[in-house]
Length: 197
Image (cartoon, rainbow, N blue to C red; front, top):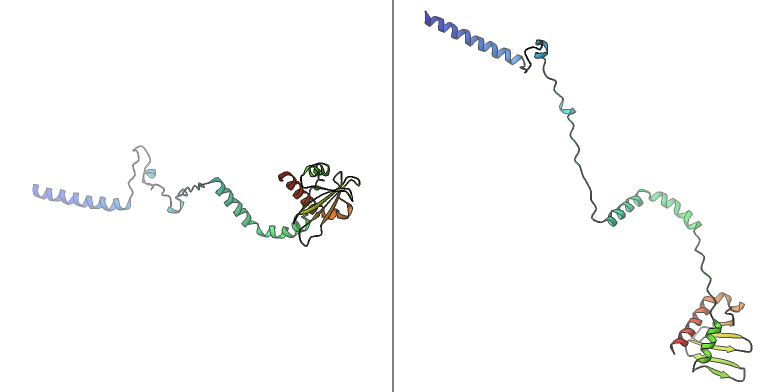
């Protein structure tokens, strides 16, 4: 008899375990305190969808090796960003652009130059026309007239007919006013010659 009872108990336990296993598969187990209502205990915990999980973007930091390299890169990017606007403005700039005014050439110190010339060992006095002359081949020929208070310098370069006539205050004769730069270059050659020889 005991043997039959043990068999019945074993069968009941086995059936109970099977029923519990089947129920457990349909229900979720949650760790809820005993005092909470059963409806809350059996509700499944909300699960966030995979799409809502946000991943933080990777942090990328660019560190230039040289500040001038970064500046030139930024300038190149800015130039590349607006080439059309510069091309549209280019004709306006060229039309409006005027060359900067040139500084007027200063008048040479003819009085100082003639004093140096009179003291130079190669300056010659010509009694017929009462002038002092200095000639340096392939460079220039000068003539100073104390009576007329004029100083004339001519280019001795082959093929050049440049002649510059100055008053003692350094003003160039009006006939040669358009050749002021070339005349000043001749005067500079004379000054260099007088100071080096």
